[in-house]
Amino acid sequence: MRSLLSLIAAALMLSACHASRARGTAPAYKAVFVLVDGIPADVVERVPTPFLDAIAREGAYARAHVGGERGGPTETPTTSAPGYMSLLTSTWANKHNVWDNGNQRPDYRFWNLFRIVETADSTRKTAIFSTWLDNRTVLIGEGQPDAGNFRLDHAVDGFELDTVAYPHDRAKRYILAIDRHVTDEAANYIARTGPDLSWVYLEHTDDVAHATGDGPDFDAAVQRADSLVGRIHAAVKQRERIGERWMMVVTTDHGRDSVSGRGHGGRSTRERTTWIVTNQRPLTPRFTRGDAAIVDIAPSILHFLRVRAPAAVATQMEGVSFLARD
Ligand SMILES: [Zn+2]
Image (cartoon, rainbow, N blue to C red; front, side, top):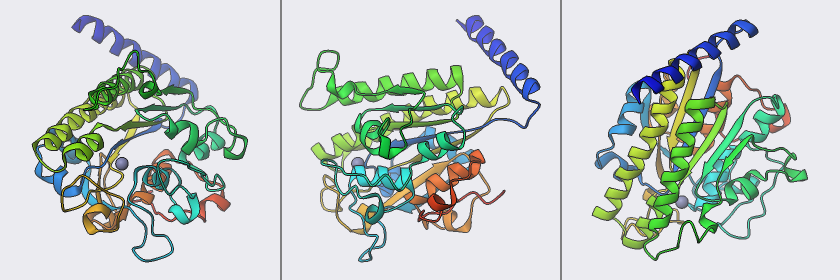
């Protein structure tokens, strides 16, 4: 097994050398962001998460927030799909217009990260590995004319609709099985092909918290999610060894209520308080003092990828890059 892996690594290294020699350009810049659903900052800080810690040792961990301005025009429910959409578009719900998980009517005038990258250079490879199909088909709006009519290069999702391969059980263990599957697919695909921009979305942590609230079951779910993030990180490290530059961002979409930990959606500090882990540094004071928001992630990734959004799109963004270098 080891010799096969080293053969593959050697082949990857050769092809990377050939590619960069052919282009005669600077190293490739690539990014992957991972969203693990509904993990409050106090929980991720208390529960042992060695794989997140390993990423943070390369870059940093900091608290952050979702939900826009409390009481202001940008206030956004601390609900999943509105949060994902804030990440993707660097806008709050008053612009992106996703207010809940169902009946979404995204306002595609506020471009998402994938549309910006594909529009800047359609040869860039984009990928999604997701336990929720709507992330691609509705929020990103893949293939829809008013969402830019573009396609991702690779999609691994939709398994939650497959009740044969993933029989639905009340405890939602099938969601954990899907999380594991999409993670394996992401790790393999990243290690093998090095896509320019990828999104990995993992859901099971939120399901466990909705069912049991704060407590040992949720802590265990967070640890399982941490180990899945570790698989993605290992794939990124593999690509870095062949000379590519990679930005990794791991975050969550909301915290939880402070009474039971089962719910979210409101404006309490615990529901609004999230966190971001990245392998990059140096970082801005806004990031390190815990003032970054979920809307800062897309501008940071664009910054790292050296991709400029069209001016009319960029001026609508509510976030700023947390990378403190050019
Ligand atoms: Zn959520």
